[in-house]
View 1 (spheres, helix red, strand yellow):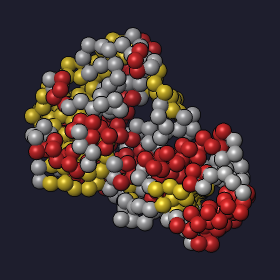
View 2: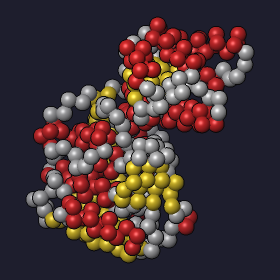
View 3: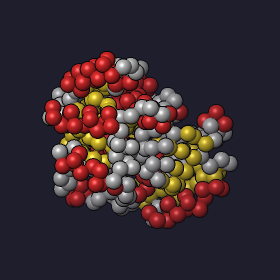
Amino acid sequence: MTARFLIVGGIYQERCIQPLWNAVFGSAGRAVYCVAPLVKSEIELHAYVADGIKDEANHLAADCGVRLVPSSAEQAIGFDYLHPLSIPIIRPAVARIARLPAIHVSGDVVLRYGMLEGDAVVEAKIAVYDPQSAFGAPRFSANGSRADRLAIVMNRMEAQSMTGLADPEAAARSLIESGEAQVVIVKQGGKGALIATPEGIDRIPYYRTERVWKLGSGDVFSATFAALWGANSVPPRDAADLASRATAAYCGNRALPPPAIDELRAMRNEPVEPGSGLIYLAGPFFDIGQRWLIEEARGLLLSLGARVFSPIHEVGPGPASVVAPEDIAGRGQADAVLAIANGLDPGTIFEIGYAVKLGIPIVVLAQTVKDEDLKMIAGNGCEITDDFASALYRVVGRLPTL
């Protein structure tokens, strides 16, 4: 059993408009809830803590039975999201965040997250590093950090930023072959993750959930993996699979801590097989709010790896004699349909009915619609959700498997 498990990372204010969320967590704050039930030795939480979040940071530590080791900070940092997949507004702006002296930590197992206001220099027997950087992911050793054994957990953009290689497998292999890490995990959203070790590359599935709450899901994955692989000697592939299951549980209900290990192993959630194909995006686009939602949905679907036929983008405005036949042709090529039913726009309702007739899988986003008005849609096998992020992940999950 290890003597000391250290978590070092950000504790930040988080706000989301839809679904509503207002809490102080950040990567490190969320991690303590995942690690505490799995690690029986001493746990320390190291973070920059401003006066504005001092009470919340102390509560996080006390609630999980860990020791908080704060480093002083003048500014409390906040992330404001419109929805869980949106690009957050960071307050204060990144350029105005004062850079603080690095936090130096030494322990048997260290989970290190990237931070906005400073850095963490690590000395560890075992380390797990999640760069958490949309602005360029530095290598673990770039600041003098050292570990006898290192696992790096990152997303595709961070892998490319760190290695200069766009292909996730090539990026992971380069870090293994260079000896920089013994385990590299590259998260790929709805396509799961790949895990590389000196023995080769394996795939970790993404597990399907009814709802998808993505804010902080990467924190849960990294923390669960660190606790299992780093502190409990669970083999890397098994630890990553359990971390993916823990992440699914969190995404599905927003609750922490994740279920116990035995419960995770017994989870019935279906692994999502990566799919590909064309999604027809149906919805009104006649005022700025409607058009914004179409633009946001289209951009996020593309980022999730899908191809998208959006009538306003692919056909554009025009007379019915031109628009209708081209829209119908696009719908006939689609492998799945995402329909935005807010407002019960007549054109969207027609498109849903036409897709039902063609037998195309349909996911319907209906946030302001009475159940009675959805009776025919629900009765014809359409999936209905009132959550935007969940609708996107559900329709991507209905694409034909590779």
